Image (cartoon, rainbow, N blue to C red):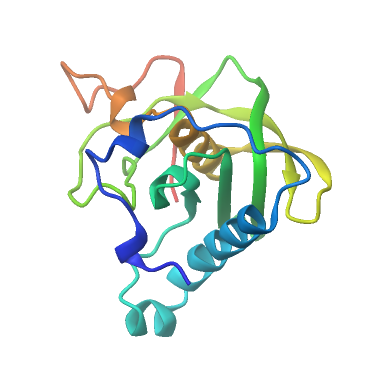
Length: 183
């Protein structure tokens, strides 16, 4: 079981490493790691489990955050009454909108302990391809908050942290051609 002790913190080299593709079909170790990742995200949102295991609530987790530099992400987020719950090997953004969006509250990260103020410009709509735990190839269209969460996690696979996107001169300057999204 993954706990907060397994989450590497900002400054750890795994967070700046470009993760390797998972050779498919995934091996037992990779399947176990990805299964534990999605369980962690779900558990972190359950108030009793979060309290019992001292988990910070999260909506996504990327393998580099548990010091595994492989292309695996877990996302469990609800938006407008729809649950987006995915554990994916080799997720890839295959298309995106020109329009941008950003979280009006700013972004946070389980690997970053302090709040970092600023808007993070993201694509408003994306299409992601990946392989599920069951080995099924999927293609999902995302917009709004789920699109932002997926982009955040896929950035981790490329050694990119959310704050890398924040305008250094003026962190709270609204990104151009971007619509605010609230959680």
